[in-house]
Image (cartoon, rainbow, N blue to C red):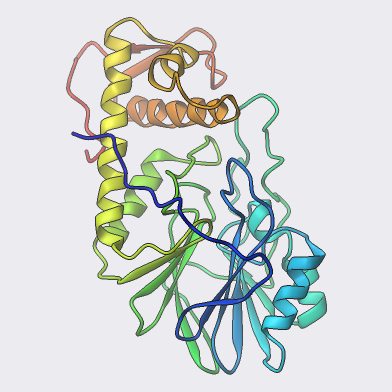
Length: 312
């Protein structure tokens, strides 16, 4: 089983320019590059009469002006939010105040948000974010010239939505599936069980293209989704191998498996290991001893010794 994923990081970006990426779909990239955002947050303008804006990105005057220019002469009917992480949703209210449109998102989840990591917490989540119109799986959003089906795809975030452009076999995947890197699963914000179940749902579809929240378009959606699932199964098995060899704390597992990773990404790696371990614990394959505050517990293999699989 291979751990390699074919990432596409050779993407050119012209910040502030509304680039047509498909008929009736334009992309504007926010100038907020970073280790978790790649070249920046992708904002999509969908429609030819009325338009929907998907993920207005962070609060940024230049990006707001770009969205205003891209929609000049058209009515903004909806502002759609894939999930309430600040790099996707913070620009929603300033955009609405300038251009109008109803803010549409999943809404409050009633669950704990943020991540159990020093210096990270819930700062990347807008826990108070509340849309004008809350939607759920199976709902439909319509404007003059576009129809989008709502797909609730939790895993990266409990409120994560994807939006499927009806009749076009096109899905706007937010951070659920990205072409430039794997998706961060950071408990309690993220759930590996939910993430894999959501991937399985996407794998059953017959889409032609994904437009992610960061990075370039994905032109082989089912292949990429299956590769992501295979990668997670492989990662789970490498974590179990570490535990069998006596490498039983998250810092030690990260050092073994992610030794060459940039220091600013090792917190994300630790959270990913934690997400896998939570999923293993839920299925009875491993257990935790000592402090169980997230990143310092000692993990041991369950006595059954059964082989785990992320698909079980």
